[in-house]
Length: 134
View 1 (spheres, rainbow, N blue to C red):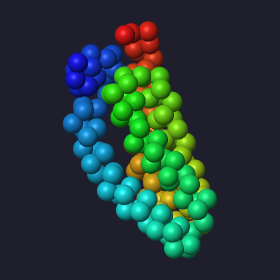
View 2 (cartoon, helix red, strand yellow):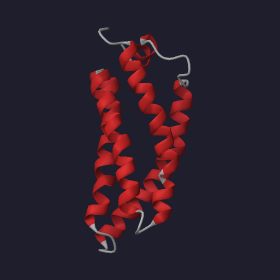
View 3 (cartoon, helix red, strand yellow):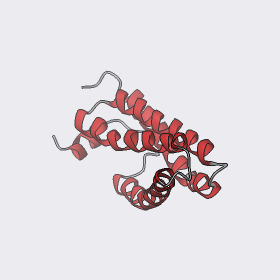
View 4 (spheres, rainbow, N blue to C red):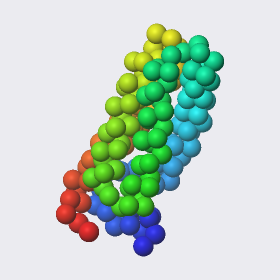
């Protein structure tokens, strides 16, 4: 079964955004994420920023990238919920780590944090509503 058919069969809260809306929001967020993450990694490579500040960015990027294969490839709602919670925590870690070096990067994380906060609640709701379903 294609991923969208599987997603459509899941029980979801009434406030769940349409898949097209979810996609649009990520299309807006990903360029912002790319620029700020790229900036942080370039500054770390140039030794203008400690690698420990770049670490939560690297971990967040990896956790974000593996969410889709977990959710739609493995179809593992619980593991996807754990992963998105990890994404959420690493956003906070990124903001704290980079704040004293580049506040604009920390502030730039706010829309990402708000969206992932909503997505985290949504994922945990979907996981709970479909607990025990095949």
